[in-house]
Image 1 (cartoon, rainbow, N blue to C red):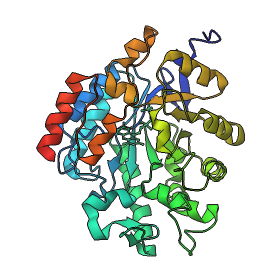
Image 2 (spheres, rainbow, N blue to C red):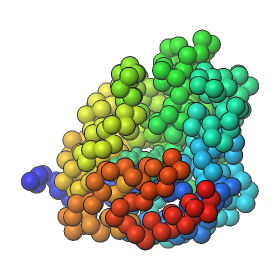
Image 3 (cartoon, helix red, strand yellow):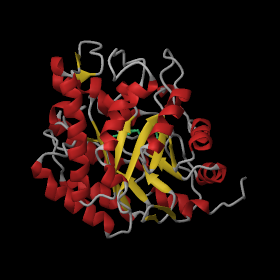
Length: 362
Ligand SMILES: Cc1cc2nc3c(=O)[nH]c(=O)nc-3n(C[C@H](O)[C@H](O)[C@H](O)COP(=O)(O)O)c2cc1C
């Protein structure tokens, strides 16, 4: 039993002027509640209202597609579709009624967009039947990120999270396994980071805005067969700090870890915290209050969870009662990506919503 500072997770946490009422973050989770053409649905908004009313400090949305053709799947919400603007304004205003903060995660699909973009799917080096990005493609990608981040601010979100992990486009630039470019966007860590640097340098005003957070999700590890990435990741996190990002969410790409019910990226995250000294959000494997308090006591600032909230929308109440999440990391919820819809084995209500939406759209 761990007794030291056991209530830390309920303490407020401030970044800039943004006050988070506790240390719990709902990690970005694609619920597949968008419509088949990437539109926000009532089910999507209701799901977030339910999450917010459960008392979470900060919600990070499902990743939203910057470019409709770069979606990872059909139900991926397209943030730049004008038809979505009012719905997203409604989303942020509803969430703010509960005193929960909400950040929008954005991505370009990279090789994950191949199902939608086919031969035109863009990656840094054109691997596996994809198209190598030209300098013009890179410039467009930078400008589209900047335009989208400004839109996110206008829609009332408390910030943006750039998805630099899990094999999406910006992660592919950072990871030497995928990025084989020989120009200024490939090679050294600094070159591979250049596209992220160029996005951030164009939103300097927002980086200085005390009421808007710019955070990133990074991969602190990579798949088994690839070279170890942690030292490279630490260097990238130092660049991110120089570029004034407000916090770094530490994840990883070695998916074998995702079967564990312990915070499997804790050591990586603590190393980044020690070497970079920036607010750290840690995601992956948290299932109970004791694990959360230990991580916070050791130096993690915020704890982020995805699957416990898929298993139980009301997991916050369970945490208050010292109950352990029922999520056993069976990973059936990930199977929606394979178009073989498998539901969370514990939550019938949310399963039905997901199932109806998914079968309509499949
Ligand atoms: C169904 C599903 C969808 C996910 N969608 C996203 C996403 O949109 N963006 C993202 O960064 N991570 C996504 N993730 C990963 C989670 O944010 C998280 O990093 C991972 O599930 C490990 O945390 P956990 O053990 O708390 O589930 C998703 C996970 C699941 C299970």
